[in-house]
Image (cartoon, rainbow, N blue to C red; front, side, top):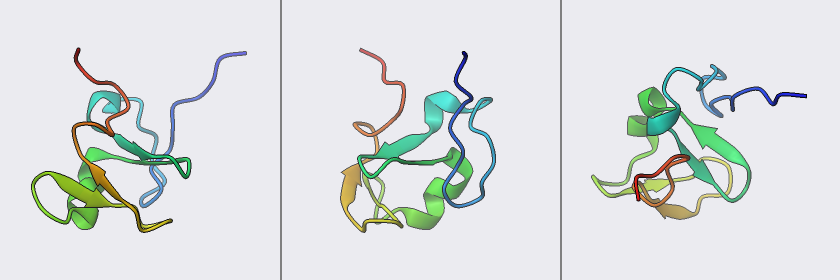
Length: 66
């Protein structure tokens, strides 16, 4: 069975059209690129709205370039 794309924790929209720019947290949430600005601490770090941990934006993307 195919899995559906992740839903943004904040806006609850599907991340299927913007999956390359979404970020995730180990607490099993995804944040879309539109909502990422609302949780950014600075240009490199964002704070998870669920568990409040800090994450590097580039390292927490769902899909990263090698």
